[in-house]
Image 1 (cartoon, rainbow, N blue to C red):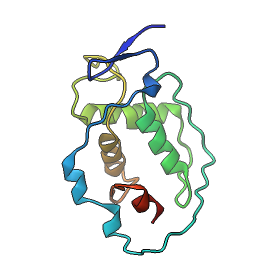
Image 2: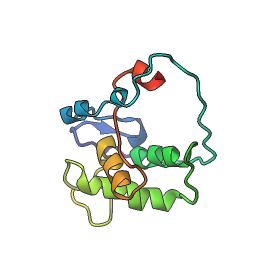
Image 3: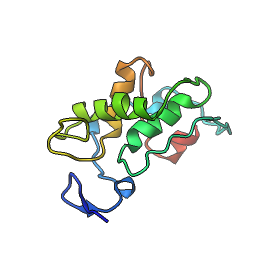
Length: 142
């Protein structure tokens, strides 16, 4: 299998299995807990009838956001592979902190992008009114 060079200099043969940890400390100013002060945990299911397969493409941010947009309670219909790659993943690569990407004519070529860039694109497109961050399992459960 062909080795793929990642942004941090490491190599992989499967771009889906890599993760470059880089955290923007400004995100700490936007915790989800500030919007939800309840202390009682609850159980809730999220239906998602769409399943997007990124294949060997390192577009997990675009596909994860596609699943979020397709899930209850605000199910957006009509998403597909091309939309998630061209209008979410590639657009996020254009605003992330790294030069290049995997979109046409990008240089240097690389797979992947930041979650923050993906969420910013979805916000700009009007899919999200705002966004906040969970900083642990308790934030997620609440």
